[in-house]
Image (cartoon, rainbow, N blue to C red):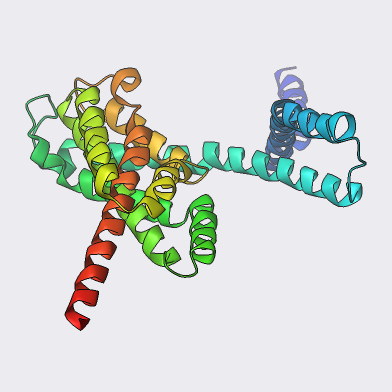
Length: 293
């Protein structure tokens, strides 16, 4: 009786074992589930983007049909471009969530660990000089992102074309990128030290006011616009992630109070850099003309 019962149990185990899903089946199921979840997330982001862009489309089409009262030229081409813009925004937003934001926060946390700083315990008594590489990284990432900014490239090329080569596109881009790099490094210094935000901003705009008085009038509008075009799709995500990551990693800092504000530095100091670039170019030109005469 016991032997028959044991044989019956073994048969049940064999049947159950044969019906168990294999590792490959489980992996395929998880992969398919991840793909479906990703597609659902993509569709939701696309719908949210359409909702945000819809007022712009309604405004343009409404003015074209109701105010100007002319048909839209090349509607098929415009529709294809509009769809491309929507898809590009969605992919860009997904890229921010998957790469730029995590990467910026990761770099900030790695640069502020006690092992990297060479201190035993990370506390509020750590000197601001210990964060030397954080300043270098902030300046480098600010310089690189500003130099790669598409809006800055467009403005620089237009300025060179309209000025007949008087304003060099490459020189303008370099001066803006240097200004952004210095501004971001100074903003990181403010986060590390916990200094008052308004002191830096007031001091920076005071310098801008003095420069505006003596800078060539030809460059004034372009300089002020250069501060705005740097805070666009490439620069803002990386700088924001860096600021939040540092505010979370540095002891005694509040991400909500100290993590934001780097964008203001990235907008202000390019104005100073471009005005300085114009003043230096003006002085060099004057000295060159005086040496000839």
